[in-house]
Length: 414
Ligand code: UDP
Image (cartoon, rainbow, N blue to C red; front, side, top):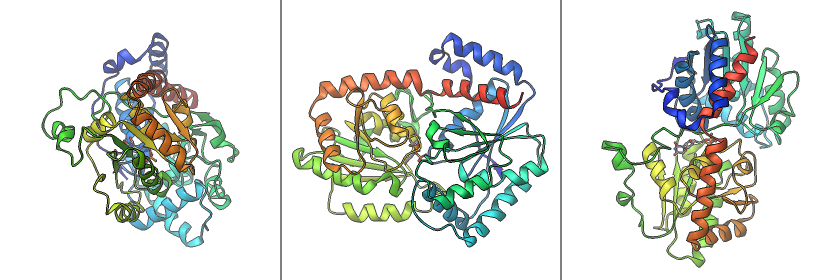
């Protein structure tokens, strides 16, 4: 296990995003948590939503006086092959969970839990990758409160994978889920619902003025291989079958039949804990080889993602299954309407016909039609964008998440 690098952040910098009730809640909670030490544990320091959230939350917890570390597991590719299969099974893929998989998983989680040599009051384990550390941690640190933060939609989980999760829940004192229904399949543990949030002050989400050096270069869309005067559709997502990049291409092609100058950018990271990325990337590359208007951008810097989400005429989130999709709030925060599928956390963020459109995951024709509608109606696009930004301001910004976590930490450490 190793410490992930974190930036310094102060809650004062976020003051304009807080209301009086939240300011009071922060004061009360931090008084109560003055001697509480917390660790967040996950499996990658970058790429994907969990790293994004933990990387922003941990510095703010420290700033308000709750001593918090961010620890990243040490693991090898075979472990991530297994945890990706677990992730897929929990999202509904019907595959087997074999003894061999368990034999790959167990020593890594036990090893990481044994490695942890500091006593924390609360440890938050993120997702199935670190969940398996719980029994060893409970044995070594019986006083520590263990929280499992599950970012995955478990509503269609394949039974062997849900049983796997359940088998590790005994030592867990509290499970955090994104929507109440995600927790219905797990038992014997108290559950709390917390919606994720985006950080409005990171290079990914803040206004683009004032950037310099590499960040300014990455944010300069004029230097990109597409034409900024022509319509641009963007999806920002790991190259993962559940993000349906091939479905994105189909929908784009159908929209392009009525808007021939449309362009598509697929922006995808390859995080350490997602070994499927390269395979899916190659499939997408192959499928788009003949279209000079499709651009694949990998491991792109945050300022560049910011500029693309801002510069896009429409952002797509065509997931087949989705825990939350930070990418939806990221785009809406920048005033860009989103066409997203009606799955998981996406309908929490998209109000159909208000700040974007919701479509069914298999309905390519409807997806293409909504893209076309937004590409051809600038007034609607602007109106949706304004509403989207307001909705994110009210519900999905980091200060609200900080308040939720402080409340939860006070609750579990009483
Ligand atoms: N992301 C990124 N680079 C990429 C693709 C994604 O930085 O090439 C970020 C994206 O901006 C978002 C996070 O990774 O902050 C993805 O979170 P989300 O909840 O949408 O999906 P997850 O990857 O957790 O399934």
